[in-house]
Length: 74
Image (cartoon, rainbow, N blue to C red):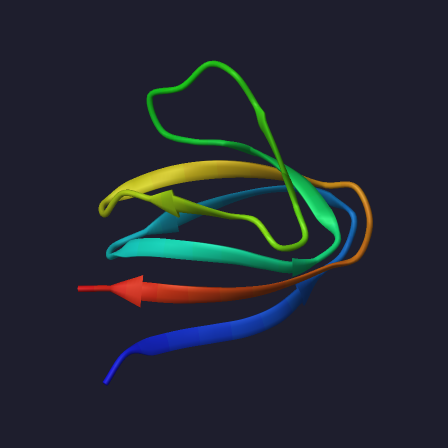
């Protein structure tokens, strides 16, 4: 009963908006994420995850091809 997306992100910088709370699981690769209301980038590697609050925006920097699974939490 949950909604998930699977994908691959190529190197670059991206900004995402989310309506629902998200759990981003990094399956392989690595990235830096700047979460809402934070001023410090976090390094996230394969096997790690992070949460994004609902109705927010977050930025990521992809360093190498990165596989992910995003779960939308309602």
